[in-house]
Amino acid sequence: MKKLIVLSAIIALYSCKKESQESFGNEEQTTVTTEEKELAPEELGKIIFESKGNCISCHQVDSKTIGPSIQEIAKIYKEKNGNMVAFLKGESEAIVDPSQSALMQANIELTKTFSDKELQGLVAYINSSLK
Image: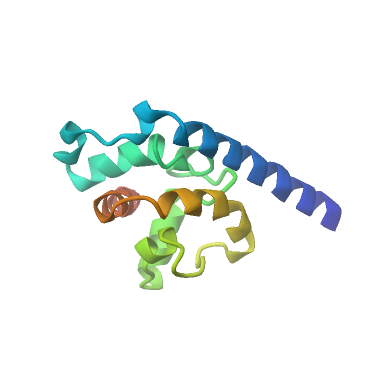
């Protein structure tokens, strides 16, 4: 049973990492334009979530796939008064599902490169799922 869990984790990590690397090398997706900088934080966050951040490959709004749903993430961070930006910068531990934090490491390396405005937008988009 442990081998099956480890194998599943490796496959999930590989699939997330591969997609992360593909989107990272695509200038069209990774460049935030002046037009996007004028967007509301939630709108900018949604763009980052679906493209540059590659978050959508593992997280959905209201259902668990590889990772927890963004509704669950927002709820837990709110309940525990967590700092999502610190987590995305690699400065704090996972509080939603620490057992799967290894799967998130490839994307944390990516989110560490985001500006504060991009990270705030991403957090605003995730938190908007609670409305």
